[in-house]
Image (tube, rainbow, N blue to C red; front, side, top):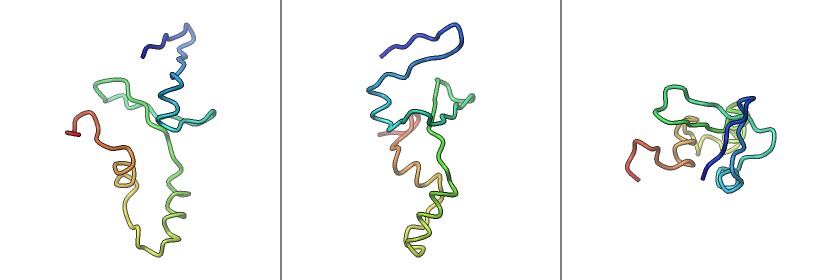
Length: 80
């Protein structure tokens, strides 16, 4: 898929990618400047997630990074 950067630095994320990533209008994305490619990841409210996980009485104790890794799957530098 391709997208064109506008003169204002804006880009439209193709609908198929928005659906696959569950992106909603108004959602904030974070860009990783150190990545070898353009990488944008949805920003999530860690405090809200921890409150939800907290209702499980400690049975789901994982770090935010562990939860994200489990839900996102392998990264580009990992074997699938």
